[in-house]
Image (tube, rainbow, N blue to C red):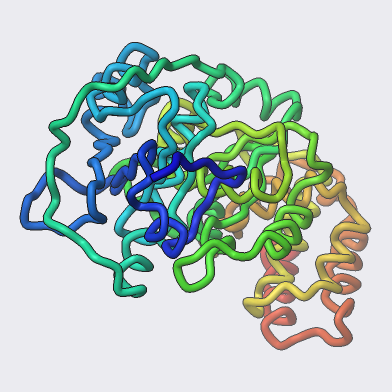
Length: 386
């Protein structure tokens, strides 16, 4: 059968089934939580791409660490991959770690690779044939790795990008993890996010296990990023789902993208966090925190309340203090406010302006809700009477 190639980084199961006998096609199973097991099923002639043990630096301190050029080239050749191979990679979750495999090949200078949309579940859903998992025993390939340094970013790169704001940093984790509302899956890893990063959960790119249509992806990315040529670094928990964002961004026409290899697992371990103690907050930080605290007392910050807060403080301050508020308990919030107020004679001498701001913000959506009234009264008691 003739050789195949495509100009897009994703293919359908129908396309793969039709071209399964193409002479230069290599199908890779990139399921990350898998080990070789002859009792499992695979797409016919698939070869197991062992991310954790073969295509990661197993001596690294963090999971899925970027391998060396020599390691990647040698392991790829052992799978029979040649310089003219057309690679299609899938995983058994639908679309998950297969994007990491796709990005690894891109990072080592190889573009003739695509992700199978919907992965193994979609293949099964279509009723296409499978076979028992089989270890590759064919000839070695002649694949040559040519590392593209700009495709992967590391801790020092992120420190600079975050501080200097040279790149948009986009985190693929869930909103709850990004805002520190739930513990990280890795035991002992602190919660939070990289300063100056924004959240775009990778699940927003998927629908029923498939990648959303290109037009939908473009809308999603346009709501998160600016121009398609601006530099972007994608992050996640350990460098896996960030690659799903990279896949969606490339399909959407973004051409200056990279993945943070260590992602939050590395950052959350190495970086101690930069948020100052409350007694070091500026007056704007304190005002933003108090207004956010009151506006969320009824468990829902309205857009009008948010609009009012942004009329009083800078957007960066608002986001910074919202991230801090999201990570604090109710008790911590009160203690933070007390500590910060005591550090500022500004409010000690004149609480009138502060409580006027609180009331104006609370009435921004038309009324002072019962919970907001309770919190307002509690703050007056603590800060003025207490």
